[in-house]
Length: 65
Image (tube, rainbow, N blue to C red; front, side, top):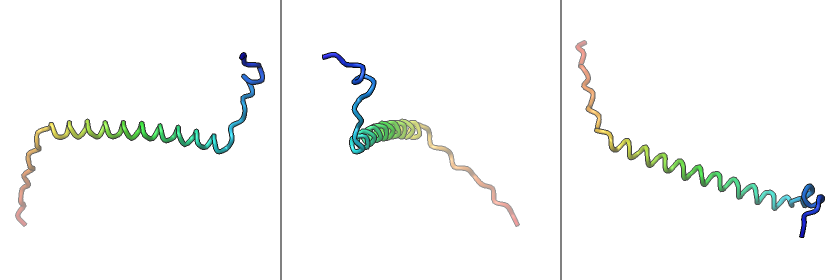
């Protein structure tokens, strides 16, 4: 079965519902990937923050009035 010129250059049009479904699937995939990346970054930054020594409290001077 060989592809004809018409089949190659003029594919059948997608229905509006099929196109919307395809768009939704792609958007969900992108959002899921971004969520996973954000969670990994958050975990990495949290681990770095917890690995740092605790800061010393700042001493404030009392002024006489």
